[in-house]
Length: 485
Image (tube, rainbow, N blue to C red; front, top):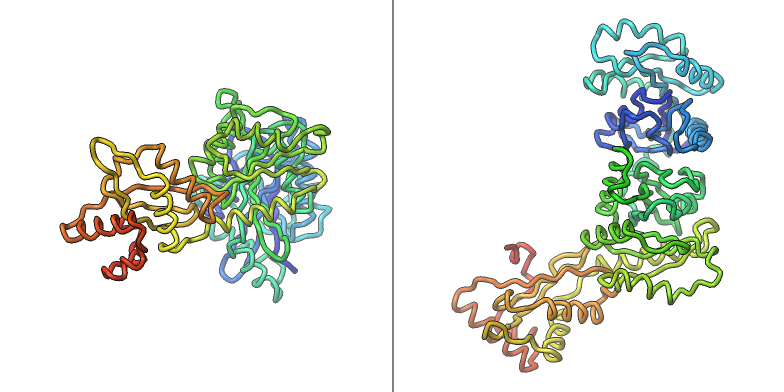
C-alpha cells in the first residue's frame, strides 16, 4: 500500500478547502465565498506523529458550474473518491442538513471505505450539541470543528489517524520519498488556454487536472509530482493569466498572484505560447515577471501539430523580437496532446537548471575578465579612469558575479552589458540569467595600494592568480557578505 489518501468531499461552500489549509498550516487551496471555486483535485502530504497521509481537496458535489464544466468537475471528484483510502465527509453545522447534503450521503453510502463525518463552522459549543442530527447522513465517527474559531483541530487529526488503514512497511518509505525535495520544480505558466493542463496530464500520465477548451479552467496552482528516468519532479500547473482590467473576480485575481508565486518557488519556468496565436500583453507581463525574478526559463511553443507550415526559425525570430532582453532563453516546440518532444523538454529543463547551479572558480573567472578588459577597456568617465580589480562568483541560482572596482559609478550600462555578454559566451551560463554587480570597497591605504598594483598587473597581462599568491591575497576567502552595501 502507498501513502493513504484522504479525500475531502461535500456539497459546495461547506469549507472543504478551508479545512485543508487549516490542517496543512498553509494556503494550499483557494478559498472564496463564491461556490464552486475548487475544480481540480488539490493534494497536500501530511506527516502527523508517525503516519503519512495525503489530503485531497475536491470540488463541491452538486455544483452547476458557471463555466459549463460540471461533468469534468464531477469526474475529478469521482477519481478522488475512487483513489481514496478514507473519505472525510464535510457538512456545515450552522446551516443544518440540506438536500445536497443528503444527495452526497446517498452517493457515499454505496462506497465501502472508512468515512469520517466532519461538521464544520461549529463556532460555539452550543452548535456541537446540535450536531447529532448529522449522524443520519453517515454511519461513521463525527467530529465538530471550526476553522474560523480554530476549534478541535487536534481532535480532527486524531480521528483521521484512528480511521486510516493499518500502515505497512512501505508507507513510511514512500512518505519520506515524497517529503524529499524533487530533482526539479517546474512552473508551467502562460495565458489562458495554451495547453498547460494538457501538458501536466501528459507528464502525470493520468487525468490529473481538468482539460477544456474553455479559457480559465484551472483556478489554483496545483503541484503534480511525476517520475521520469528514475528521478522525481514537480510540475506546478498555474492558472491562466489575463489582463488585469479583465479580471472578473477575486478568484481570478488570486490566480494571478498564485502564478507569480509559482514562478518564484520554481527552479525553471516553462513559458507556454500557442503557436496559432500572436504574443499578447499577458505574455509580456509573465515574461517580465520571470525576468524580474531571474529564473531560468524555456519558451515552449505548444500545439505544433496544428501549425502545418510553421517555421521554427521564424517563431524564434518572432519571440526574440518581442523579448529582446531574453535572447539567452532556449526555445522548445511541443505537442502536449500527443506527448511530442515532452521528454526532450524535461531534459532541456534539467540542463539549464544545472547551468544555474554551476559555480565558476575565481581564477578562471578572472582570466575571462582580463581578456574582456584587454579587448575593450572601460572608457573614462568624469575625467577618471575606471579600474576593475577582480571578480568573484558569490552565489548560484542565479549565478551572481561581483566585480570589485575603484568606483562603481564609472561603469555605464553599455559596458555592463558587454561584460554580461562575455560571461554568457565564455562561462557555462549560456542559457540562464546572470546577476552582475559592481562594488567599490572602502580600503585602507595598504590595501588600496595592493589592489591598484594587482589591477595594473592584470592590464599588463601577468597572471593575477600568481600575483595574488605572491601578495598573500586569496579571493576564495571572500563571501557574499563582503560585498553587501
